[in-house]
Image (cartoon, rainbow, N blue to C red; front, top):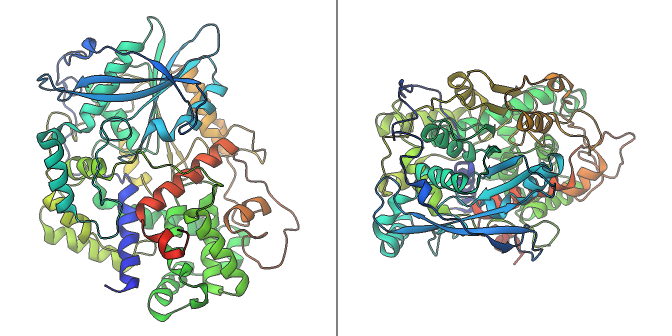
Length: 573
C-alpha cells in the first residue's frame, strides 16, 4: 500500500471512529404505548441492591488535588440476568460548596469509548461555577477508563488486526463481552442515581454526542427517575455510523457556504471553493503539491475534517486550506504549526485518551449503531458509499475497512431497547449545531420530532458545531456565557419553566478572518491567512480557557487515536 493510500485509509478510520452519525427514522419502529417500560417498573432491574461507597480522589485527572470523591462500585455484570458475576463501575463527584445543595447532575461522555472521569472534570467545574448549588458527577461507562476498560495490545497500531483483537478479548473475558452494552451502562447510571440521590432534590443529566445515546437509553428504561436532561450534539435512538462520512462532508460544505456569505472569506476563496478544494486534495495526494512541507501537507486534509468538530477551530478550516493551496514558505511554517498543535510532543495541552477504549467503541457500534433497513445487502451499502465518494470533499476513504470489521465482530443483540424511542415526560433540552459533522442536524432533528412533549425543547443553532454550550458566543467578551450554556443553566435551575431563547438571535457569525491570539495558537504565526502582516483590527474569539483547554485536549486525543503512527512519522518521538 502506498503512503498516500495509508493516509487516505487513516483519514477514513479517523472520521468514522469518533463520530456518532445519526439516521433518519427509515424502517425503525416508533415506540408503542408501552415503550420505555418494557422492563416493567423503573426498578425492575435490581438497582436498589447496589451499595456505593466514596473515597477521596483527585478532581482533575492525573493530578493529586484531593478535591473530589470517587467510587468503584460492583454492578451486576448482566443486568437482565444477574448470575452473581459483577463489574466494577467507576464514578467521580465533586459536592457543592454551598450550605445546601439543590441536587446532582451526571455528565455522560461520548465516543463511544471516552472516559468521563478523565475528560469531563473541566466542563463539570464550569457548570458548578455557574450553578454552585449543584453536586457534579460523572461516570466511566462500562468498558472504558476504570470501569473494566476493554483493550487489545495492538489496537493503537497502524497494522491493527481486528480478528487477532477479537481472539485476545474472548480469551481474556469470554462471554462477558456481551455485557458491555449501552443498556447495561444506562442501568449502571440509574443505580448510581438511586444510591446517591437525596430525597426532595433534583437528579439531572447532561450527555454529549454518544453520551446522548446513553442518556436516551436511560430515559427509555427509566422514564421517570430524573428531573431533567440536557443533550448536546444529539445522537438519536436509531443512529447508524453508515452515514458518518456523509455527515462530515455535508458539515464541511455547509461551513464553506457560510464562508461564501462572509465578505472576507469569500474574497479569499472566490466562487466554487469546494471544487478548488477537491482539486487541491488530489494534487497533494497524487501530484506532489507542496512537497517542500516535508510530508506535513498530507495531514492537512485530515486536520481540516477534524477541526470541523469544534468552535472556534472550525473557523480556521478555510484559512488552513487556503495556505495549503498557496504553499509559500510562510504557509509551510503555518501548516507545520497547525500539525504541531494536534500531534506535537510539547506539554502545552493536556493529553487525554488513556481511558479511551477502541474495543468498547467497536462492540457498541457494530452491535447497535450499524445495520439499517435501507441497506439490506452489501451491494446496496457499497453502492451508497461509492456514490458518496464521487461527490465528497471532506471524505476521501471508503467504508470497506469498517464493513470488514463489522462482519467478524462478535455482536450482541438488544431487541428490548435498541432502536426504540423513549416514552417519557421528563423535561428535556436538546441543543444541536447545524455545522456539527459528528451528529449532523439532518439526522439529529428526529429526536426533537419524537420527544416533543411539554418542557421538551429541541434548539438548532445555525453557526454551531459539536460544542454548542461553548460554541455559541453572543459577544466578543470571552467571559460572557455562551447562549447554549446560558440556556442550559436556565433549564437546570427550573426544568419546567418556559425558556427565554432570545439569545439565539444574538449568536455571532463565524469569525473566518481570525485574530492574532487564535492564529498564534493554531498556526504559530500572527495571521490566519497572510504572511508577514498583522491584523489592523481584531474581533476577539470569545471562549474561556477552561473550554478551550477541553476542546484542544479532545482534538489531540482523537488525532492520536486516529493516526497512531503520525507522531513517529513526523519526528515527534
